[in-house]
Every structure is written in structure tokens, then in C-alpha cells.
Image (cartoon, rainbow, N blue to C red; front, side, top):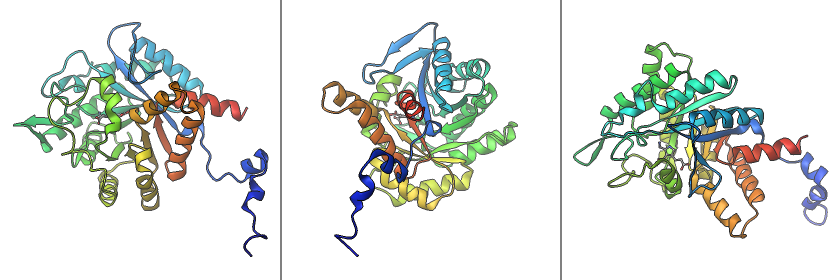
Length: 327
Ligand code: PBG
């Protein structure tokens, strides 16, 4: 039955045929748009390492988020840039902190848009680590106290989903317990379950000024070489009460996304991180890649690997394109 009777090119002859047999489709409700929020008013500071991305004050974030909602993107995820940093990252769990203010404003002024918050202290600590530090070591269990407080204050501000990204052991269970005790048993947790120590976070750290001041994140984020361990991380987060599990970064981890898809029944999110975005932007600016095609190909590959949701800085651009193509 092989060639010449079997010709796979038959179904590739025209766009209507290709469209009909297409196995994977990207759609606007798959996307989550990340935003950096900062203090002040009417502020829109360009992030030089992430062309097209800005640090926005709350008033301008509200405007952006309204556009996101209009485009049909279901959710935003917020990262805060505080005006003060200390050893314990206290600005991260200040009930009046920048993310807490932003959540309240968005819930008030952009009803129907889901607000996800990043639960981590690295943007708020003077040392830039995701955990408390003692004698140069990153403490695990002590950090859980901070994460509980971050998640609770986000919940109290009205967050729809909390997303812990710190990679401390036991944080999902700790946050679940805290939310349940504080009267938020129905608030979902999207856990950055398999988060690898990756150089592709560099533009984000630039944007959030959150590079560690000493050492690196390899004692808490995963070793990129480990796929079986990623599955253990994911299964543990599921056991501890995660509602959505995330893999990060996305394109360097398509195998992990696919493995996760075959192992767990929860929705799977993938984070197309800052470096993945900036790489495409830079190549496009140099004239080496077509930006639109590279954007869509990267997103489709993440979806094909098995992600249900994609956190991406391209969310608005991709949504515009997707909405136009189904009009
Ligand atoms: C930690 C956090 C980081 C990212 C999301 N949450 C930075 C890090 O781990 O260093 C990176 C996202 C990106 O690169 O787009 N709060």
C-alpha cells in the first residue's frame, strides 16, 4: 500500500484542504497576557530588552487590560515592580502593594477579565532571590510563610487565580492551606510546577530588576537536563492541590509539555518566556525572520506539544491575527 498509492501530499494541495485536516488549532482563549505594573500615574516605561513591552502604572494597565479583554483574551498575569525592596520582600505581601492595587483596579474597572497573580518574592527582595536568605543559602520552609502571605493578600485584593513561581518545596500545599483557612477555598492555583533554571529569563529580570545579587537560582529552579524530575515536580504539585500546572520555559521544554500531557489530567499551561519573545523580536528586527510567522509557529508548536494555555508576551498580537482569520 505504500507509494505510489499512498500520497500524503494529496491533503496538502490547498488551504481549504489543509485547514480541514489541521490537527492543532491555536485560539484566543488559549492565551494569557503578562504585564509589569509599577507605581505612579500615566507611566509607560519601555523595556529595552523586550521591544513592545512596558512597565505600566495602574491607570495605564487598566486601559491595556480593557483592550486585552476586548480582543477575547481571557486572562492577564501580573508582575509587580515595587518602590522598595528588603531582605524579606515585605512589599510583596503589603495589602496595599503594587500588585494588590492593580488587582483591585482591574477587578473594579475591567469586569470579566481574569486576573492571575505571580506569587513570588524575587521582585521585592533586596538580594533578588525567590526565597529568604541566610548565610548565602536560600531557606525553604521559612519562605513558605512569605508565600502564604503573598497569596492571601492577592486573594483579598480579588485575584482570580494565584500562580506561585518560586520553586520552594511544599509551596502549593502551603498556599492551598492558607487560602482555605482565609476563606478562599474556591480560588484556583496555577503552579509553575516544572520551572527550569533558564537563561531565557534574562530580559524579564531586566524588566523587573530581579536578577539575584549573588549566586544563581539553581538550588531551587530545575536542572534543564532533567525530564523525569519535572514529572515528579508536576505530580507533587497536583497532589498538593494545584488546579493548573505550568511548564516553563516553553520551546526549550516541548518534550516536558508532551510528557506532562500524557501523565496528568489537569489543564497544562506553558510560559513562553521573555527570552523566547525577545529572540524572535530581535531576529525579526534584523530582518532574519518574519515576526508574525515566527510568533505563530512558536505558539502553535507549544500547543501541539500539549499545552492548553500559553502565557505569552505575544498575546495581543496573536489574538489580533487569530480574530482576523476567523472573521
Ligand atoms: C519569578 C519569575 C520569573 C519569571 C516569571 N516569574 C523570573 C525568574 O525566575 O528569574 C520569568 C518570566 C519570563 O522570563 O518571561 N518571579
